Length: 461
Image 1 (spheres, rainbow, N blue to C red):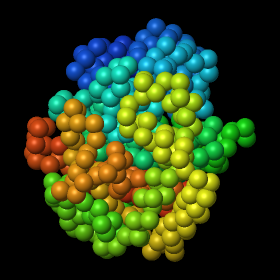
Image 2 (tube, rainbow, N blue to C red; image 1 turned 180 degrees about the vertical axis):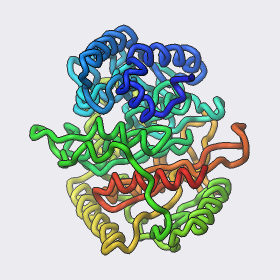
Image 3 (spheres, rainbow, N blue to C red; image 1 turned 90 degrees about the vertical axis):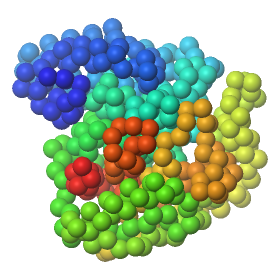
Protein backbone atom coordinates (compact mmCIF):
# COMPACT_ATOMS: atom_id res chain seq x y z
CA UNK A 1 0.00 0.00 0.00
CA UNK A 2 1.39 3.39 -1.04
CA UNK A 3 0.65 5.48 2.02
CA UNK A 4 1.56 8.71 0.24
CA UNK A 5 -1.16 8.20 -2.38
CA UNK A 6 -3.95 7.71 0.18
CA UNK A 7 -6.19 10.77 0.67
CA UNK A 8 -5.74 12.69 3.90
CA UNK A 9 -9.19 11.65 5.05
CA UNK A 10 -8.23 8.00 4.60
CA UNK A 11 -4.96 8.49 6.46
CA UNK A 12 -6.82 10.16 9.33
CA UNK A 13 -9.13 7.14 9.64
CA UNK A 14 -6.20 4.72 9.62
CA UNK A 15 -4.50 6.66 12.40
CA UNK A 16 -7.69 6.85 14.46
CA UNK A 17 -8.21 3.11 14.15
CA UNK A 18 -4.57 2.56 15.21
CA UNK A 19 -3.87 0.72 11.93
CA UNK A 20 -1.24 3.35 11.14
CA UNK A 21 1.06 5.37 13.35
CA UNK A 22 2.23 8.92 12.84
CA UNK A 23 5.81 7.64 12.77
CA UNK A 24 5.07 5.10 10.04
CA UNK A 25 3.38 7.74 7.93
CA UNK A 26 6.21 10.21 8.46
CA UNK A 27 8.75 7.59 7.40
CA UNK A 28 6.84 7.01 4.16
CA UNK A 29 6.52 10.74 3.51
CA UNK A 30 10.22 11.42 4.05
CA UNK A 31 11.08 8.58 1.66
CA UNK A 32 8.72 10.05 -0.92
CA UNK A 33 10.29 13.49 -0.51
CA UNK A 34 13.75 12.01 -0.95
CA UNK A 35 12.61 10.43 -4.21
CA UNK A 36 10.41 13.15 -5.74
CA UNK A 37 11.66 16.48 -4.44
CA UNK A 38 15.02 16.73 -6.25
CA UNK A 39 13.26 17.04 -9.62
CA UNK A 40 10.68 19.55 -8.37
CA UNK A 41 12.28 21.63 -5.62
CA UNK A 42 8.97 21.97 -3.80
CA UNK A 43 10.11 21.46 -0.21
CA UNK A 44 13.06 23.74 0.49
CA UNK A 45 13.65 23.28 4.21
CA UNK A 46 13.22 19.89 5.87
CA UNK A 47 12.78 19.54 9.64
CA UNK A 48 12.90 15.76 9.82
CA UNK A 49 14.18 15.42 13.37
CA UNK A 50 11.67 17.88 14.77
CA UNK A 51 8.90 16.10 12.87
CA UNK A 52 10.03 12.69 14.14
CA UNK A 53 9.94 13.90 17.74
CA UNK A 54 6.42 15.27 17.27
CA UNK A 55 5.22 12.08 15.57
CA UNK A 56 6.55 10.01 18.47
CA UNK A 57 4.72 12.24 20.95
CA UNK A 58 1.48 11.84 19.02
CA UNK A 59 1.90 8.05 18.85
CA UNK A 60 2.38 7.92 22.61
CA UNK A 61 -0.75 10.01 23.04
CA UNK A 62 -2.72 7.70 20.73
CA UNK A 63 -1.49 4.67 22.71
CA UNK A 64 -3.19 6.24 25.74
CA UNK A 65 -6.44 6.44 23.77
CA UNK A 66 -6.26 10.18 23.17
CA UNK A 67 -5.94 12.19 19.96
CA UNK A 68 -4.75 15.75 19.53
CA UNK A 69 -7.37 16.78 16.97
CA UNK A 70 -8.68 16.12 13.47
CA UNK A 71 -5.18 16.26 11.94
CA UNK A 72 -3.55 13.92 14.46
CA UNK A 73 -0.36 12.52 12.92
CA UNK A 74 -0.87 13.97 9.44
CA UNK A 75 2.29 15.55 7.93
CA UNK A 76 2.24 19.02 6.41
CA UNK A 77 4.80 21.43 4.97
CA UNK A 78 4.26 25.15 5.58
CA UNK A 79 4.59 27.87 2.96
CA UNK A 80 7.85 29.74 3.45
CA UNK A 81 6.15 33.07 4.11
CA UNK A 82 4.46 31.77 7.29
CA UNK A 83 6.60 31.84 10.41
CA UNK A 84 7.39 28.51 12.04
CA UNK A 85 8.94 28.21 15.47
CA UNK A 86 12.41 26.71 15.28
CA UNK A 87 12.26 26.21 11.50
CA UNK A 88 13.89 28.61 9.06
CA UNK A 89 11.52 31.03 7.34
CA UNK A 90 13.13 32.89 4.43
CA UNK A 91 10.21 34.58 2.66
CA UNK A 92 12.09 33.48 -0.47
CA UNK A 93 14.53 36.34 0.08
CA UNK A 94 18.29 36.37 0.73
CA UNK A 95 17.58 39.09 3.29
CA UNK A 96 15.96 36.44 5.51
CA UNK A 97 17.97 33.44 4.37
CA UNK A 98 19.04 32.58 7.93
CA UNK A 99 15.97 33.77 9.85
CA UNK A 100 14.56 31.28 12.37
CA UNK A 101 11.37 32.52 14.11
CA UNK A 102 10.68 31.95 17.78
CA UNK A 103 6.91 31.68 17.36
CA UNK A 104 4.40 30.24 14.90
CA UNK A 105 2.05 32.15 12.63
CA UNK A 106 -1.52 31.93 14.02
CA UNK A 107 -2.70 29.29 11.55
CA UNK A 108 0.47 27.22 12.07
CA UNK A 109 -0.18 27.19 15.81
CA UNK A 110 -3.73 25.98 15.12
CA UNK A 111 -2.45 23.25 12.80
CA UNK A 112 -0.13 21.98 15.51
CA UNK A 113 -2.95 22.05 18.08
CA UNK A 114 -5.03 19.98 15.66
CA UNK A 115 -2.27 17.33 15.59
CA UNK A 116 -0.51 18.09 12.32
CA UNK A 117 3.18 17.18 12.04
CA UNK A 118 5.15 20.04 10.46
CA UNK A 119 7.90 18.52 8.33
CA UNK A 120 9.36 21.68 6.77
CA UNK A 121 8.71 24.56 4.38
CA UNK A 122 7.50 24.88 0.78
CA UNK A 123 8.97 27.19 -1.83
CA UNK A 124 7.59 30.61 -2.70
CA UNK A 125 8.60 33.63 -4.79
CA UNK A 126 10.20 36.55 -2.94
CA UNK A 127 7.76 37.71 -0.25
CA UNK A 128 5.03 35.75 -2.06
CA UNK A 129 4.99 38.28 -4.91
CA UNK A 130 4.00 36.85 -8.28
CA UNK A 131 2.40 33.69 -9.65
CA UNK A 132 5.69 32.05 -10.63
CA UNK A 133 7.60 30.25 -7.88
CA UNK A 134 11.30 31.09 -7.97
CA UNK A 135 13.70 32.99 -5.75
CA UNK A 136 17.46 33.55 -5.34
CA UNK A 137 17.62 31.46 -2.15
CA UNK A 138 16.26 28.14 -3.41
CA UNK A 139 15.69 28.53 -7.15
CA UNK A 140 12.65 27.51 -9.17
CA UNK A 141 9.91 24.99 -8.39
CA UNK A 142 8.86 22.78 -11.30
CA UNK A 143 5.49 21.38 -12.29
CA UNK A 144 4.99 17.63 -11.62
CA UNK A 145 3.02 17.33 -14.88
CA UNK A 146 5.95 18.68 -16.90
CA UNK A 147 9.13 19.77 -15.15
CA UNK A 148 9.97 22.25 -17.91
CA UNK A 149 6.93 24.30 -16.89
CA UNK A 150 6.04 26.51 -13.94
CA UNK A 151 3.94 25.34 -11.03
CA UNK A 152 2.41 28.80 -10.69
CA UNK A 153 2.44 30.68 -7.43
CA UNK A 154 2.89 32.03 -5.02
CA UNK A 155 2.02 28.81 -3.15
CA UNK A 156 3.83 26.89 -5.88
CA UNK A 157 5.97 24.73 -3.63
CA UNK A 158 2.88 23.71 -1.70
CA UNK A 159 1.00 22.70 -4.83
CA UNK A 160 3.93 20.76 -6.31
CA UNK A 161 4.46 18.89 -3.03
CA UNK A 162 0.79 17.88 -2.82
CA UNK A 163 0.50 16.93 -6.50
CA UNK A 164 3.61 14.74 -6.22
CA UNK A 165 2.21 13.05 -3.07
CA UNK A 166 5.02 14.34 -0.85
CA UNK A 167 2.42 15.57 1.64
CA UNK A 168 -1.34 14.89 1.74
CA UNK A 169 -2.17 18.59 1.82
CA UNK A 170 -0.54 21.97 2.39
CA UNK A 171 -1.34 25.51 3.43
CA UNK A 172 -1.17 28.44 1.07
CA UNK A 173 -1.77 32.17 1.22
CA UNK A 174 -3.82 33.94 -1.43
CA UNK A 175 -3.73 37.65 -2.21
CA UNK A 176 -4.10 37.83 -5.98
CA UNK A 177 -4.24 34.17 -6.99
CA UNK A 178 -1.66 32.45 -4.82
CA UNK A 179 -3.71 29.43 -3.71
CA UNK A 180 -5.97 29.14 -6.73
CA UNK A 181 -3.38 29.57 -9.50
CA UNK A 182 -0.95 26.82 -8.42
CA UNK A 183 -3.87 24.53 -7.62
CA UNK A 184 -5.12 24.98 -11.18
CA UNK A 185 -1.65 24.44 -12.68
CA UNK A 186 -1.21 21.21 -10.69
CA UNK A 187 -4.69 19.67 -10.97
CA UNK A 188 -5.60 20.28 -7.32
CA UNK A 189 -8.27 21.81 -5.14
CA UNK A 190 -7.31 25.22 -3.73
CA UNK A 191 -9.63 27.36 -1.61
CA UNK A 192 -9.38 31.11 -1.14
CA UNK A 193 -11.24 31.37 2.15
CA UNK A 194 -13.61 34.05 3.37
CA UNK A 195 -11.44 36.65 5.14
CA UNK A 196 -11.15 35.79 8.83
CA UNK A 197 -12.14 32.13 8.55
CA UNK A 198 -8.48 31.26 9.10
CA UNK A 199 -7.19 33.64 11.81
CA UNK A 200 -4.40 36.02 10.91
CA UNK A 201 -2.52 38.77 12.68
CA UNK A 202 -3.18 41.09 9.72
CA UNK A 203 -5.91 43.72 9.56
CA UNK A 204 -6.33 43.18 5.83
CA UNK A 205 -9.02 41.12 4.06
CA UNK A 206 -7.04 41.12 0.80
CA UNK A 207 -4.71 38.28 1.85
CA UNK A 208 -6.07 35.05 3.32
CA UNK A 209 -4.78 31.58 4.19
CA UNK A 210 -6.40 28.53 2.62
CA UNK A 211 -5.93 24.80 1.98
CA UNK A 212 -4.43 23.05 -1.05
CA UNK A 213 -5.27 19.35 -1.46
CA UNK A 214 -5.90 16.57 -3.94
CA UNK A 215 -9.60 16.31 -3.05
CA UNK A 216 -12.24 18.69 -1.73
CA UNK A 217 -12.72 16.47 1.33
CA UNK A 218 -9.00 16.69 2.10
CA UNK A 219 -9.12 20.47 1.73
CA UNK A 220 -12.06 20.57 4.14
CA UNK A 221 -10.20 18.39 6.63
CA UNK A 222 -7.20 20.70 6.56
CA UNK A 223 -9.48 23.70 6.93
CA UNK A 224 -10.96 22.10 10.04
CA UNK A 225 -7.50 22.24 11.56
CA UNK A 226 -6.83 25.86 10.52
CA UNK A 227 -10.04 27.73 11.23
CA UNK A 228 -10.72 29.01 14.72
CA UNK A 229 -11.31 32.11 16.78
CA UNK A 230 -8.96 34.14 18.90
CA UNK A 231 -10.18 37.28 20.70
CA UNK A 232 -6.66 38.66 20.41
CA UNK A 233 -6.62 38.48 16.60
CA UNK A 234 -8.43 40.69 14.06
CA UNK A 235 -10.71 39.32 11.37
CA UNK A 236 -11.31 36.01 13.20
CA UNK A 237 -14.73 34.84 12.02
CA UNK A 238 -16.53 32.55 14.46
CA UNK A 239 -16.94 29.12 12.90
CA UNK A 240 -17.19 25.54 14.07
CA UNK A 241 -14.26 23.53 12.77
CA UNK A 242 -16.29 20.33 13.01
CA UNK A 243 -18.53 21.50 10.17
CA UNK A 244 -15.71 20.79 7.73
CA UNK A 245 -15.25 17.16 8.76
CA UNK A 246 -16.74 14.33 6.69
CA UNK A 247 -17.47 16.52 3.67
CA UNK A 248 -20.12 15.15 1.28
CA UNK A 249 -20.59 16.21 -2.36
CA UNK A 250 -23.53 18.49 -3.05
CA UNK A 251 -26.27 17.30 -5.42
CA UNK A 252 -25.69 18.75 -8.87
CA UNK A 253 -29.25 18.48 -10.13
CA UNK A 254 -30.87 21.88 -9.80
CA UNK A 255 -27.61 23.63 -8.89
CA UNK A 256 -27.79 27.22 -10.16
CA UNK A 257 -24.55 28.14 -11.91
CA UNK A 258 -23.72 31.54 -13.36
CA UNK A 259 -21.12 30.86 -16.06
CA UNK A 260 -18.57 33.08 -17.76
CA UNK A 261 -15.52 32.23 -19.84
CA UNK A 262 -13.95 35.67 -19.52
CA UNK A 263 -15.81 37.98 -17.10
CA UNK A 264 -16.82 39.89 -20.20
CA UNK A 265 -13.46 41.22 -21.33
CA UNK A 266 -10.52 39.04 -20.24
CA UNK A 267 -8.34 37.20 -22.78
CA UNK A 268 -8.36 33.43 -22.18
CA UNK A 269 -6.24 30.92 -24.08
CA UNK A 270 -8.25 28.66 -26.43
CA UNK A 271 -6.92 25.50 -24.74
CA UNK A 272 -8.36 26.69 -21.44
CA UNK A 273 -11.72 27.51 -23.02
CA UNK A 274 -11.92 24.11 -24.70
CA UNK A 275 -11.47 22.15 -21.46
CA UNK A 276 -13.93 24.35 -19.59
CA UNK A 277 -16.51 24.13 -22.39
CA UNK A 278 -16.49 20.34 -22.07
CA UNK A 279 -17.06 20.59 -18.33
CA UNK A 280 -19.85 23.12 -18.86
CA UNK A 281 -21.67 20.60 -21.07
CA UNK A 282 -21.21 17.93 -18.40
CA UNK A 283 -22.73 20.21 -15.77
CA UNK A 284 -25.79 20.77 -17.95
CA UNK A 285 -26.12 17.02 -18.56
CA UNK A 286 -25.89 16.44 -14.80
CA UNK A 287 -28.93 18.65 -14.26
CA UNK A 288 -27.31 21.96 -13.32
CA UNK A 289 -29.09 25.13 -14.39
CA UNK A 290 -26.24 26.94 -16.16
CA UNK A 291 -26.77 30.55 -17.19
CA UNK A 292 -24.29 32.73 -19.06
CA UNK A 293 -24.06 35.66 -16.69
CA UNK A 294 -21.54 37.36 -14.40
CA UNK A 295 -21.30 40.53 -12.33
CA UNK A 296 -19.36 43.37 -13.88
CA UNK A 297 -15.91 43.41 -12.31
CA UNK A 298 -13.67 45.36 -14.68
CA UNK A 299 -13.43 48.19 -12.13
CA UNK A 300 -11.84 45.74 -9.68
CA UNK A 301 -8.55 45.89 -11.62
CA UNK A 302 -7.60 49.38 -10.47
CA UNK A 303 -8.78 48.63 -6.92
CA UNK A 304 -6.54 45.58 -6.81
CA UNK A 305 -3.53 47.41 -8.21
CA UNK A 306 -3.89 50.20 -5.62
CA UNK A 307 -4.59 48.05 -2.57
CA UNK A 308 -1.87 45.55 -3.47
CA UNK A 309 0.64 48.36 -3.95
CA UNK A 310 -0.39 49.91 -0.64
CA UNK A 311 0.46 46.59 1.04
CA UNK A 312 3.78 46.44 -0.79
CA UNK A 313 4.68 49.88 0.55
CA UNK A 314 5.14 48.11 3.87
CA UNK A 315 8.40 46.78 2.43
CA UNK A 316 9.74 50.31 1.84
CA UNK A 317 12.43 49.98 4.50
CA UNK A 318 13.71 46.80 2.86
CA UNK A 319 13.81 48.62 -0.47
CA UNK A 320 15.90 51.40 1.00
CA UNK A 321 18.33 49.04 2.75
CA UNK A 322 18.46 46.05 0.37
CA UNK A 323 17.38 47.26 -3.06
CA UNK A 324 20.02 45.16 -4.79
CA UNK A 325 18.59 42.00 -3.21
CA UNK A 326 15.02 42.47 -4.47
CA UNK A 327 13.71 41.36 -7.88
CA UNK A 328 12.72 44.06 -10.35
CA UNK A 329 8.97 43.40 -10.25
CA UNK A 330 8.99 43.65 -6.45
CA UNK A 331 10.90 46.93 -6.59
CA UNK A 332 8.32 48.25 -9.07
CA UNK A 333 5.41 47.22 -6.84
CA UNK A 334 6.93 48.74 -3.69
CA UNK A 335 7.67 52.01 -5.45
CA UNK A 336 4.14 52.08 -6.85
CA UNK A 337 2.83 51.78 -3.31
CA UNK A 338 5.15 54.49 -1.98
CA UNK A 339 3.88 56.88 -4.68
CA UNK A 340 0.20 56.43 -3.81
CA UNK A 341 -1.75 59.27 -2.24
CA UNK A 342 -4.15 58.93 0.65
CA UNK A 343 -6.97 59.89 -1.70
CA UNK A 344 -6.13 57.02 -4.08
CA UNK A 345 -6.11 54.46 -1.27
CA UNK A 346 -9.34 55.80 0.25
CA UNK A 347 -11.06 55.77 -3.14
CA UNK A 348 -9.96 52.16 -3.72
CA UNK A 349 -11.38 51.06 -0.37
CA UNK A 350 -14.69 52.79 -1.09
CA UNK A 351 -14.84 51.16 -4.52
CA UNK A 352 -14.04 47.75 -3.01
CA UNK A 353 -17.01 48.11 -0.68
CA UNK A 354 -19.21 48.86 -3.70
CA UNK A 355 -17.90 45.78 -5.51
CA UNK A 356 -18.49 43.61 -2.47
CA UNK A 357 -22.10 44.79 -2.35
CA UNK A 358 -22.54 44.18 -6.07
CA UNK A 359 -21.39 40.56 -5.81
CA UNK A 360 -23.37 40.01 -2.62
CA UNK A 361 -26.50 41.12 -4.52
CA UNK A 362 -25.56 38.80 -7.38
CA UNK A 363 -25.98 35.83 -5.02
CA UNK A 364 -28.91 37.30 -3.08
CA UNK A 365 -32.12 35.32 -2.56
CA UNK A 366 -30.56 32.13 -3.89
CA UNK A 367 -30.41 33.47 -7.42
CA UNK A 368 -27.16 31.57 -8.01
CA UNK A 369 -25.31 28.98 -5.97
CA UNK A 370 -21.95 29.65 -7.63
CA UNK A 371 -20.25 31.77 -10.23
CA UNK A 372 -18.04 29.64 -12.51
CA UNK A 373 -15.10 31.00 -14.49
CA UNK A 374 -11.50 30.09 -15.41
CA UNK A 375 -9.06 29.97 -12.53
CA UNK A 376 -6.12 30.85 -14.75
CA UNK A 377 -6.42 32.47 -18.16
CA UNK A 378 -3.44 30.47 -19.43
CA UNK A 379 -1.95 26.99 -19.13
CA UNK A 380 1.38 26.47 -17.30
CA UNK A 381 4.24 28.23 -19.07
CA UNK A 382 8.04 27.66 -19.17
CA UNK A 383 9.91 28.02 -15.87
CA UNK A 384 12.37 30.38 -17.57
CA UNK A 385 9.55 32.89 -18.15
CA UNK A 386 9.04 35.16 -15.14
CA UNK A 387 5.47 36.16 -15.96
CA UNK A 388 2.93 36.10 -18.79
CA UNK A 389 3.53 39.10 -21.02
CA UNK A 390 0.69 38.52 -23.49
CA UNK A 391 -2.47 36.44 -23.85
CA UNK A 392 -3.96 35.84 -27.29
CA UNK A 393 -1.83 38.69 -28.60
CA UNK A 394 -3.00 41.14 -25.96
CA UNK A 395 -0.05 42.61 -24.03
CA UNK A 396 0.01 42.37 -20.22
CA UNK A 397 1.42 45.61 -18.81
CA UNK A 398 2.57 44.33 -15.39
CA UNK A 399 3.53 41.05 -13.75
CA UNK A 400 0.11 40.73 -12.13
CA UNK A 401 -2.19 41.62 -15.05
CA UNK A 402 -2.34 38.07 -16.42
CA UNK A 403 -4.16 36.69 -13.37
CA UNK A 404 -7.16 39.01 -13.34
CA UNK A 405 -9.61 36.11 -13.43
CA UNK A 406 -8.48 35.57 -9.84
CA UNK A 407 -7.50 39.07 -8.66
CA UNK A 408 -10.92 40.48 -9.57
CA UNK A 409 -12.48 37.85 -7.31
CA UNK A 410 -10.04 38.76 -4.52
CA UNK A 411 -11.41 42.30 -4.52
CA UNK A 412 -14.97 40.98 -3.96
CA UNK A 413 -13.88 39.34 -0.65
CA UNK A 414 -16.01 36.30 -1.51
CA UNK A 415 -14.63 32.75 -1.15
CA UNK A 416 -13.44 30.97 -4.29
CA UNK A 417 -12.17 27.48 -4.98
CA UNK A 418 -10.20 26.10 -7.92
CA UNK A 419 -11.31 22.63 -9.00
CA UNK A 420 -9.57 20.41 -11.58
CA UNK A 421 -11.58 20.68 -14.81
CA UNK A 422 -9.51 18.31 -16.94
CA UNK A 423 -6.39 18.20 -19.08
CA UNK A 424 -5.75 19.97 -22.35
CA UNK A 425 -5.10 16.55 -23.94
CA UNK A 426 -5.10 12.93 -22.84
CA UNK A 427 -2.15 11.71 -20.85
CA UNK A 428 0.31 13.44 -18.59
CA UNK A 429 2.44 14.91 -21.38
CA UNK A 430 3.66 18.33 -22.34
CA UNK A 431 0.39 18.83 -24.21
CA UNK A 432 -1.83 17.39 -21.47
CA UNK A 433 -1.82 20.17 -18.91
CA UNK A 434 -4.23 20.78 -16.02
CA UNK A 435 -6.95 23.41 -16.30
CA UNK A 436 -8.81 24.72 -13.27
CA UNK A 437 -12.42 25.85 -12.94
CA UNK A 438 -12.90 28.62 -10.37
CA UNK A 439 -16.11 28.53 -8.35
CA UNK A 440 -17.09 31.61 -6.37
CA UNK A 441 -19.72 31.39 -3.64
CA UNK A 442 -21.67 33.67 -1.30
CA UNK A 443 -19.75 35.42 1.47
CA UNK A 444 -19.03 32.99 4.31
CA UNK A 445 -20.16 30.00 2.23
CA UNK A 446 -16.85 28.12 2.32
CA UNK A 447 -18.36 24.78 3.38
CA UNK A 448 -21.03 24.84 0.70
CA UNK A 449 -18.40 25.80 -1.86
CA UNK A 450 -16.27 22.76 -0.97
CA UNK A 451 -19.33 20.50 -1.17
CA UNK A 452 -20.02 21.78 -4.69
CA UNK A 453 -16.32 21.45 -5.56
CA UNK A 454 -16.41 17.79 -4.53
CA UNK A 455 -19.37 17.14 -6.84
CA UNK A 456 -17.85 19.01 -9.78
CA UNK A 457 -14.52 17.23 -9.33
CA UNK A 458 -16.25 13.85 -9.43
CA UNK A 459 -18.09 14.90 -12.59
CA UNK A 460 -14.86 16.05 -14.25
CA UNK A 461 -13.21 12.75 -13.44
